[in-house]
Length: 166
Image 1 (spheres, rainbow, N blue to C red):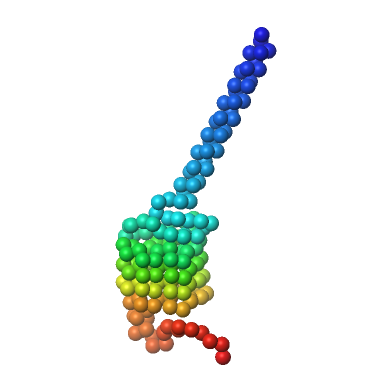
Image 2 (image 1 turned 135 degrees about the vertical axis):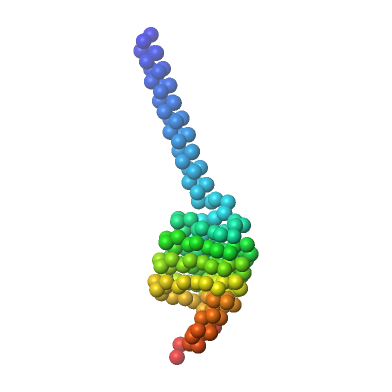
């Protein structure tokens, strides 16, 4: 009788251990999913695909390495964006027509700003461009007060619609 009782206890312990591990796994995967797809930010593989929030001052999570194309496009309420030092690229039209945007910090980790990235940000007056930037595509700052101010300061600053080989 003792052997049967010990087997029963051992089986019960094994079953309970499996249930606990299963619950822990479910809890862990649920937490990871919540972090990756919060209500405000849609992020996939480090790329901010879409900002869905309605706040004036946005702080992008440090898990983001790329601001995706049109991620903040047409966001009328966003006035300020703080990018983490993990961001290395701002893709084309990322902030297109976000006409309430007044300022954005571009960290010195950013290497590339895509075509039309800030085009139509009609209130964007202050941008500090770090020396780390290797390339800025055409029309990146088109229709921004910042670009107009740069052009007044230096007549050599101009926009280029198309580059052609000689």
